[in-house]
Image 1 (cartoon, one colour):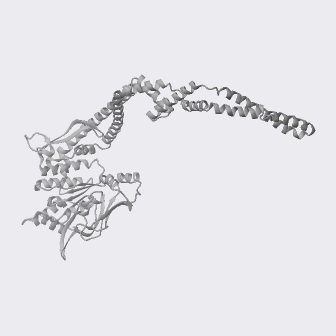
Image 2: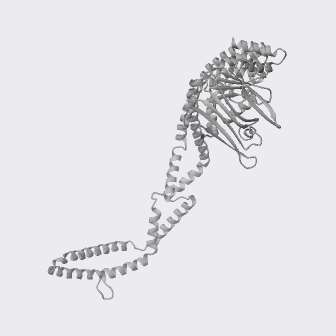
Image 3: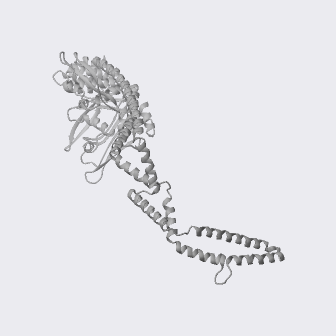
Length: 560
């Protein structure tokens, strides 16, 4: 429930602070006095009036402006604040402040209970706080999906659960359909490239690639064959130094044997030399092992020009294919195996079959969920028809006919139903889309009846109407007044009105007036607290010679 509203430098208002109670509240005053400013301010503080529209609200010549609205918390609002991680206090305070920057530029900041809040969060919270119906809002009927959204609101939590399931299944089906389409497109491209892929596989198979390290091994063999003479020379030198001796000098092997013999003799004299003798023996064993390895290496140094040619040709072929495909040997082997598997398996047949089955299963689930939602909407549509056909006749539409038409449309996250409200106000007139056949007055009455029906199920605590009764006769405005008053027994209701019949039934009455001081126009809002003030205002609304008596009778009827 809206409990208070403060304005600073908004439109024609310098300073304003209002307090509100439950029930039915009306705002009256002459045209242009600023009645709609209060509704515009509420719209702005709750995420509306962006950009130039917001700046038009600011009072000319001022650098700062502020709107502050306070609300009594409902369980739905408390739950939202908790989920959004805002602190819950006794009341909810929503504020928006404008501040001039450079030149004509203004910055805008919104807060919840003193904490910064973004516009998206405000728009999420807004339906839980207020439902504002302004002049011209009947155009909402022509907006795509709006009639479906109203119908779904009437369905409450049960239909909302069906919609959530539809959205989940829809998302899963979309993902499966996208995956299937991607593979189908890839298959199409693959079929076009199949000849190229087969030629590539043939080429890779011809290379007989098995060992990712083949190139490194071949390069080692090549180096050994290319430098065979130099390696043999080095080997001969090593044998000369280690085993044969050089320049009539003893070999390293002979030196080592003589050293061991001497250490053996010394160890017999000094036992502490046994370890050193053993080290010499290990050295001798190591030397013999080295010589054996050199012998084996020497056997591999046999010159083979034909083998060298074969190795160089193989290396050249491997390097060419690697440059061509931008892959190393391991990558070429992996590509060959993948191509072989894909071509042997018939391309994408396995993947396609799996994805088609998955898409078919999810499409069936999607259609089943849509069918459940369709049946729920049919039931809600019948309930809406019944409710409106009870509310509309007392408002001067005695012969009204109304139906909710559900037709099939392309499935989407909201289901597969196109919802159209069909309307006929006169006998003999066929049912047709509401926007095509209803007059402005009929649209206003229909909208009031619709909002009254929705008030029983949606989460909004406060309903605000801007001249919802415009363009209707006195008798019809009386019926609308009774409906507004009855609605106020369930919800807090505000109405900007020029109709004395509507104003007379209100629990709270505010008058908006404007005056000029020193060439500056200002709006004022005053609460009419006693019967005399209200009678005078009702008389001004009624006009005519018998206005005062008429106003008195209206108040008397209300008090009766």
